[in-house]
Length: 571
Image (cartoon, rainbow, N blue to C red; front, side, top):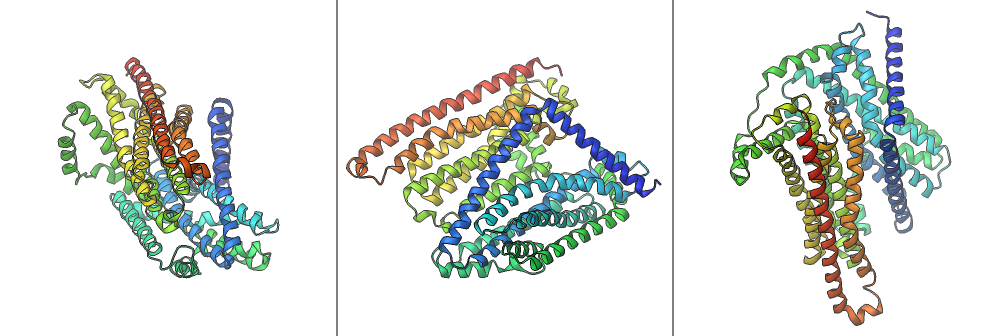
C-alpha cells in the first residue's frame, strides 16, 4: 500500500488536473454554456436578493418583534436546506461510490478506501452544495444590509455556510455506505420510504400553518405560528446554530457569533471523520455487495398499471405504445428522475395549496392577476428545467443501443413522435393540475383560469417538442451521464430556446392583463368599466391566438428538424 502522504498528493494532483481540463474546455469549447450559466445565475441571485431585501424591510417596518421572527425564519430556512442537502448528497455519493466507473478503477489501485472516499466526497460536496450557496448568500447579504451589520458579518456568514454543508454531507455519506452494506438490493425501497417521510413532514408542517388561528399577519396569528414552528429552534439542530450565530454576528456580538461558528465547524469535522472511518471499514465490502446484488434484482408490482396503460391508449399504434411504455418504465426505475420531479412539482403544489393562507385571496384583483401569471411563469420555468434535464438526453442515452431502434418495424419518425408523446403526457398532467390549483386558490375567475390552462397546454407541447427535436438533432452518443449531456452545448442551446419560447408565449397575455388591471381603479374605468372588460376579453383572445401560433411553430419546426436528423442518422 502506498504511503498516505503520497496518496493524498496524488488525489490532489488528480483533482487539480481535472479542474484545469474542465476549465480549459469551458473556455475553448463551451463559451455559450459558461456565459449562459453566469448570466442566469446572476439574474437568479439578483431576484432572490430583491425578494429577501423587500421581505426584511417589510418585517422591519410593520412587525415589532423583528429579531425573533428572523430567528425563526432562519431556523426553518436552514432546516429545510439541511434536509435537502442530506438527501441530495446521499444520492450523489451513492452513485459516485458504488455506480461510477471511476470508483471501480480507484478501488483497484493501492489507494486506501478512505482516500478514495475522500476524493469522491469532495466531488459530491461540490455538486450538491453550490445550490445551497446560491440560495443562502442573497439572503445573508439582504439581511446584512437591512440590519446594517458591520463588514465582518459577511466573511463570517460565508464561513458558516461552508461549515454547515459538511454536516449533512457527512451524515449522507454514512447513510449511503450503510445502505449499500445492509440493504444492497432495496435501495429504491429505502429511497421511496425516505421520500414518503419527507412529504409527510412537509404535509404536517403545511397543515400546522394552514390551521394557525387568527387572521393572516395579525399578532395572534404570528404568535401562534411562531409557537408551531418552535421545533426548528431546538438547540441540538445545526440549523439553530447557524441561525443564532448569524443573528449574533449581525448585531456585533462577536463572542457569541464565533462560539456558534466553532460549534458548527467542530460538528462538520466530526461528521466527515465519522464518514471516513465508516468508509475505511465498510466501503469495499458494501461495493462488493452492491455488485453481487445487481444480477438478482426482481421487478414487480407494475404489471397492472402497464396493462391499464395499454387499454387506455389503445388508439395509438401498438409499436409506438410499447416505446412509450419503455420510456415510462425507464422513468420510474430511475430514482434520480422521478425523485427530482416529485421534489420540484411537490414543493410547487405545497406552495399553491397555502396561497390563501398567505392572504392573497383578499388582495385586489390586480395582485391576484399578477401573482397568477407569476405562478404560471414559475411553473413554466420548472417545466423547462425538467425537459432540458431529462427529455433532451433521452435519445443520447440510447447510446450504443441506438441501432436497436433502427431495427424496429416502425418508421423512425414514429419513434420521435413516441418520445414526444411521453414527454408531453407527463408534463401536461403535472402542470395542468398545478396551474388549476393555483387559479382556484387565487380565485382568478373562469376566463383567466381557462386562459392559464390553455397557455400551460401550449407550453407543454412546445417545450416537449423543443427538447425531443433538438435532442435528436444534437445527440451526444458518447456520454452516459444525462447531467453532462444536458450541460453540454446542445443542452444549453435547448434551455435558451425554451426560455425564449416561454417569454413569447406568456408575455402577450400577461402584459395585456397587467395593463388592464393596473388601470382598473382609475376614474376612466368607472365610466367604461363593462366595455373595457369586453375589450380585455377580445385582446386576451388575440393574445391567446398569438401564443397558440408560437406554440404551433415551436412544436412543428423542432420536431421536423429532429425527425429529419434521426432519419439520416447511421445507427
